[in-house]
Image (cartoon, rainbow, N blue to C red; front, side, top):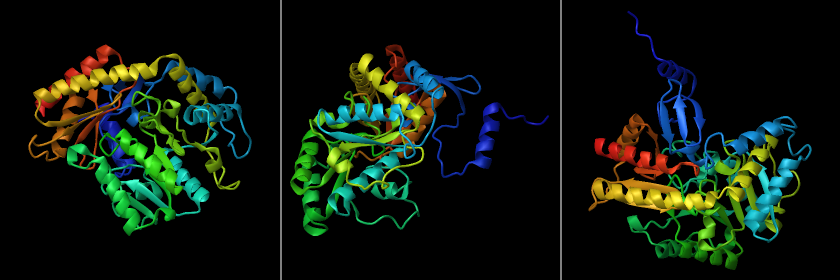
Length: 428
């Protein structure tokens, strides 16, 4: 009798045949439907989704506010291209985001499609404003897969591969990582050394930083470090760009990660959870900087799509009216406490990291050597999936397991996830 593949196997054969291998997929699943913090595959199996589209779904799958806003907008206008004519959702969203980031100062917003596109345009704007070319980013940072995004990214594999030559005048300095012996003072000393030996401050257009490194391992920049960068950039006329693509919209317990340091960046890039699952990104920044490029220098066919802007307005409504920031803080405290309990039981957890509901565990061979154990991290991820929990990895050594569950996750779902993770750690 011939072996008949099940629906998942048939679908994955199509993927192998028609989708390039360069697009990695963390789990061998094919999903059919989703709601809140749960997803179901095409065979009806349920999973707790603690990936959230890699930080896209802070409001969860198919949030009622987002669904209703998109349905209503679809009956009006779905796309016009803002370079052709304006439409209300774009203008309303620009007003609200500018106020949210600017805090009463004059800020403006440009809408695009992807996070990498937002980062690239922030670099363009900074260069136009300063007339300088140099950009400083950080080792371990992730800023996208376009050529400039890959250049700005501070990791070699899997992102850089043989894709060069890369864009010029981009430099990297160490990011603080106390667990690996890199202090904020070390990073600031490296920046001073860079100015003295590589490029003077007068040649640098911008410093680009994630307030909490996402793909780099969920490493939080110490507040004093961010405040020092703010002072250095202000002193030298350098544009400070905060990449809030993964940290933004409540993930850290504040609307934006930079708020933990009490600073205000010159430019902020946002994407991911901005539009509740629809493709939308933005650069939000000081008006005099945003206005540096001449007309025609900025834009994009799908940038600020009307449906996505309507979804984003619904996302902001949810944050204003549904207590999501307080919920993020509460969930983050509970997850951190649960992960620390697991760390006490499983010696392979070297460090628990938590900034709000942006949490991770670093997997090591042993506590003494702190040797990264990427293979173990993958075994835990696979074992968690087998039990019904979806998580993914990150970190320069790919040995960090990150948790990006929706802010609408229930207490019962969080308890269930911790129990499933406990079993996965024991099995791995």
